[in-house]
Length: 318
Image (tube, rainbow, N blue to C red; front, side, top):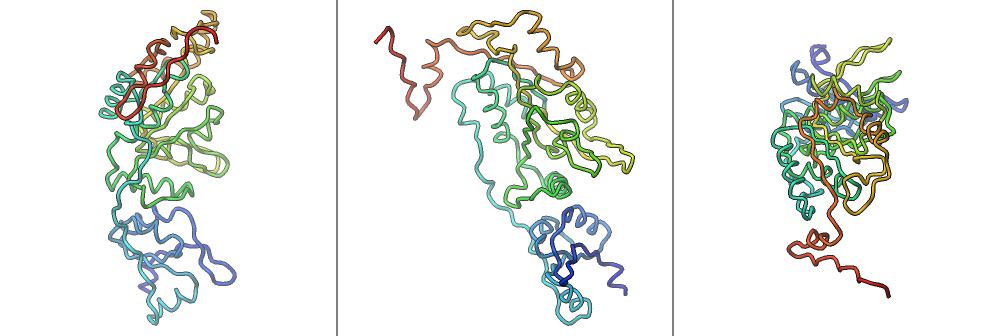
């Protein structure tokens, strides 16, 4: 009886006696370690539970295995502890050719944890730059990596032990609702800002998001968490993320581009840029404007060690 009182049992029990995997095993393992309890979990969750050190965690595939373990006949196998592996390759900042000012702005944002808004015409590399911010961010330490993995476990999102130290990068589409962004719903769903905890949340085409959706970011940007209150539950989720955003300077995207003529009226430009409120912009520490380079300068932009310059266009007709 004493063994039962100090053991936590997790899993879905089928009618056949099979023990199936469940979600939220990682935060349960953290709580068991804090309480000094042992755990018996499904074998399908062994890799996830192996991320938590210093906890007696056993795995089982059938209810009869659990009975045999508690009776002292056949001990259950333990969970193999996680071993550090080289981080998997991903998008790298070395892929960027030119754009020295933009790369410096990303380096400053990465070093200081600043939120960054990149504004410029289409084709200037805003999305490509943002997707490579993770390559210059430091790997997560064990405590922060466990926080990220616990959030993913609660959201029933697979936790990759090989890449669990990589800061998360989330990029929701601009049609995302407020619930998809911050979480909530009739049954609790973890939002994108919590899945980006200790990582980067990238919002491309920022003015295309609903203004009501953007306004819900103001509280988590200040506090690093989100409080969700519904009639059936109240919950507080972590949401300490670095905000990266990109937008065109006007609806047609040609404002400031020396190669194209902007067709937007001043009123349309003000209306487009006004979709992002001042209080939200106040929480963005740095804003950078990238303009397109003229056609005669683009060959120089393409020159890099080991890469040929882009062929010049033939002049004249024929």
